[in-house]
Image 1 (cartoon, helix red, strand yellow):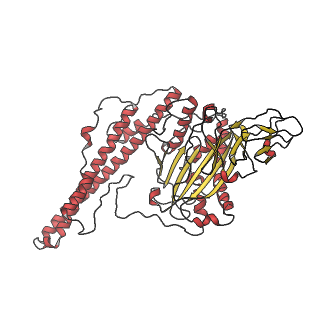
Image 2: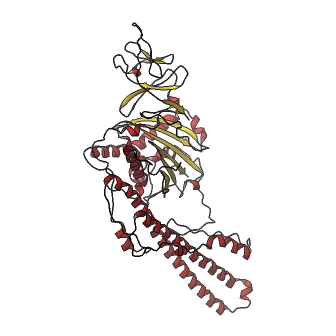
Image 3: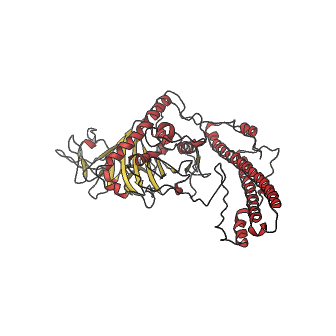
Length: 536
């Protein structure tokens, strides 16, 4: 669902951007791990220059002397993760040595074929030397493939070690303990199978419980500034309480309880007069701080209804629904430099906001769910990964050119590389010339309803912004993509309410969704510091 971006891909009648281009100077081994040799054009580098150039690539210290000696010992999860990292360093060093062998053999072949050498050697001698070199070269290529396999296996081990570290956090909540034997440096299938047996799952099942008060102590974006004009109102629900947004006399936004103090009439059914919202029942008027300043037909009483801290920043209206004092800073949700906002869409969806966030933080479902919209014709990769730093709520998808971040408490930001309308190409967003940036805000309206704010920005085709009625087209495509997800997420919600666990068996590409759930659980438990939080 993150790729509502698809709207762009499907809606453009012609290609408005250039295809991704990957420099052909660089060649790497398969399997997601590349060792690159950068050699200049013919005769552009002398022998000393080449030696200097190779020195930075091949002169890497053998890491085996620094690896911890753990043979015969049982390790905890963090020690096992450190050992897996040393495996990666060793595989990198081994691959560099293998590649250096190929480069040196290549030089020998060039030397044998050199015209000056041919003058002093017979054809038979040259054939013999070439045959020997071809054999050595084939052996070196074989060794590179072996190194390739070692790197792939070591990366799998490292990913699994990180899963085990996440599992450690789950143990704090479930009070379960397990003994995990440290993986050896061997990459045999048998050891990996043994290592992958212990598994833990998140428990997200049963009726949605009332939201914990600690989850309210954040700034929440609730509306786009362009939707809140003078003398207009926007009614919203937030954490199962009704509120109404409007602008005061000074033009600043306010958020007050959407219930008149007199007879509990919904205030949004009334009107805004001179910066005050007027109840349609008896005309009582309230300011942005909730104070009643006018009571027609009776004596003015000292009446005030509840209001929330409300701010406007970067084109969005924010509220603080919690009881704690609000923080002084708001997170920035602006698109990166060079992007122009093309669409801002608001929808009310009949799903709990956590399930919607789970869906947005998952791209592996696209080739199976969005077959009629942006993922139409996508091939199914043999392996989908979400690569993240050791601590953090952001990362990038492999093999899709998409960067993604969860921004607490309920925002998802993503940047998608687009090469051609209807297609995603390239292994990273940097390889693509044009991009689409998305913001999804999942406001928890109630336990079974979410207010979704969607903002779409492009770094190409600026003229699209000025085409009349274009926002209707964007909304049409956004609804198409959402409907593909909603039929599944609504079904999930029904089964979850009846006791099914929607996070029963997390796998590798669920990493960001799992981290969101661990972060949310930690908030509700009052844990400090929070997991995956950025260092201050």
